[in-house]
Length: 351
Image (cartoon, rainbow, N blue to C red; front, side):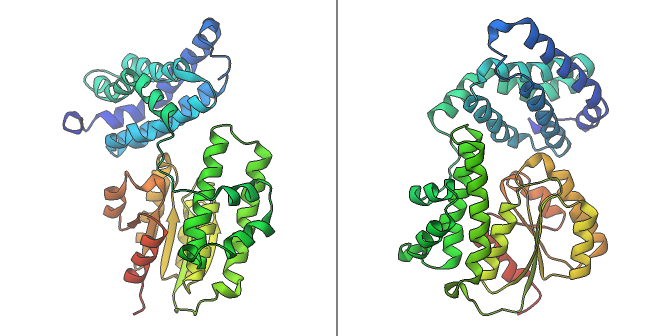
């Protein structure tokens, strides 16, 4: 596919994006109202929201030629629509609307290049839904169901005791975070997306995990000698998944780092300003959604200008497909917490 991709395809998509999106919105609205027999009522306004979300993803994929990532990223929509019972027809409408908008407003050959990846997904949609229904296919590590029960009840005390009494293989604080809390966090998120838990349960679990992440580094068992290295941790701009940087911060503290955590949703300029002012040995940035990659790239560009000696390690689901792109901007890409820590030790200033 990339061999057939012209340099003009992404720019013309960007230039016509607002017009294409208007067509997509209108077509979804008309189809939703005109064909109640397709059972689209259950999805309702979520269809337009999903279509706009997909549009943001397409802009990034087209702009940076990340076409190989589209199928994996699109599976998120398949799981979402399957979990909520919106189904094949509703997601077909979203895809068809983007295809129609592209083919109607963009000239050839660019329209064919832009629509072809979407048409391939459309042709394979039944198989994608079958894959989603057969299993979530996320490859998440196993979680402790008893710990999960504690978290969903918001029972921080029992959850902490369960961590402290865990088996020898996860008997150190860093392993509590990596091998127990991270899998539990992933499972909570998955159950919430699949409508398998109530909203209040997701909130209880999230707050319980935050409490544990605050407590764990302060436990006597977690005391680690300081290694003389500093870290600044943050989400990419626009990414509100602040549990991940919180977990990374706690993990680094158990390894002897001095850590400051900026949390989530900080603008580009403020992340750059913080790194420039605080001069950490390593800046860790998490990215959960690929469509936010441009904001992360803006941070990297700002750091290269204002803090050129800074070392940046990025990680998270959104960085996997864009590894080469991120590395070309000077970042190191980590597969997981342990890999990120090893990279940090290698690239930081101190011996």
